[in-house]
Length: 270
Image (cartoon, rainbow, N blue to C red):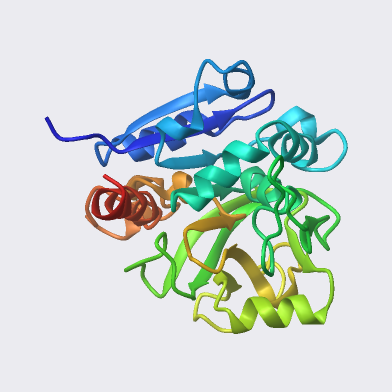
């Protein structure tokens, strides 16, 4: 019997996109489990048993301090060693919306080399996601130009259309040097654009992100974080104009991301 690709979709208080994310991976025959973080803390579940870690969208702990900060601290402090091992083993991590916020605020996904101690994910945070320039929650569909070289974005169309839903989605870097490093290392995975793929203005860039950046990877391309929601355009009929587009198959433009993750594990980790 062939080995299964195993995906852990992390959830905690306030997570609300875990079911959709589990569904997306299951369509490509992965074993996807929505696991509450307390099970990891208690040792009932081990990260070591999985190939892909996903932190889905939502409002973890009510974004009480700032979006994703509390979960980021929990991961860094309580699961730091496990995460370091997971990354060192060449496994995959995906953070969507709140999950992207968690990854950058834990310093797991950053604009430079990661630093870590033996005990902890002693990562340096040099990028963040902060309040939208509009000063309000933005829920709309956005065009994205696909860039870089990542496991997750392989064979995506040049421009994709995903929905966003966030109040703190503005990507900024600590300084110009960090931004330059992200650009030079081809870590930009997605940029907001207008429908023609050109430089956007609001609302095509819904939050004012520096460089119109909507998602980045680490330098290996195995860790991806993005603010838009590919799981919400997983099926073709989720496209807001699907009835006008004719029959375009089962899957929407978000599906390829999940398929890519599963295919990579089959090729390199099983």
